[in-house]
Image (cartoon, rainbow, N blue to C red; front, side, top):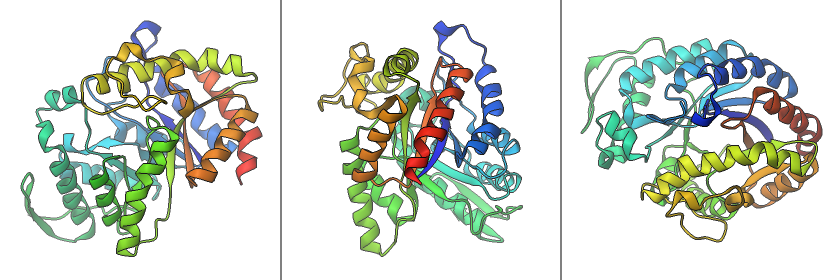
Length: 343
């Protein structure tokens, strides 16, 4: 089992922090994290958020690539319908060369209505634009000369250079949960990256249609990454005191708000759907965090290993409002006391 890190670069309004702090802390921690044995660094993204949740993950990825040597660098996940696909294909090709073939292209269709409104893209077109944009992008990467005539995007005969360092292109990871989207991911030979917003039972359910479709088309799934909210300290109490407010903020203001608005369902541990964001607390989703001591983390990760069999656990430790020093301490505990148990 491999381990990676996730960054969202959020600054909760009540924290009074600087917009630049999460980025400088990320750049400071990545070389050390690489030395500790973390094998990837991903960047979450949303748009039009009050807390600065990274709206430009490609820029963050380029910065991360510049301070690392071996880590895979990726988006988890970029909201593809909000981008001009040919320009994005060019940017990724350059980034993959800067990273010397270490980039992972994680994508999703998105779901937050205000993001589509801000970018003047009809939310009802998100899935169609998402799949068509991927067709255009992969065509541009594969073909020396190409043209594209789709429903949403049209490109006259042209060429894209440089090509990505990885051939035929960087791995594509899907961040989706709908059954049809999971099946499309398998048909595209894309890796499914499982969101932290889903509990363990939901992860198992989401893997099923993906695995069934892969088996149907004769494709062997090469990786099974999951994202989890992880924070470790010397005692359970200390870990919860530091990470609790951050997780309560995240699940209230992002996931809970979206579920209350009817944009994307969020289920509590008891299976009930969140319809009021203010009903969310740290305790509501405690079954899906890994927050506690190293011994607790080993027990929880062992359960995931046995039930979900992840190839990689991408750890969201740099949670909104948590200082870089506290995140660094958590990283050290995971690397030194937990990761050796899963080699």
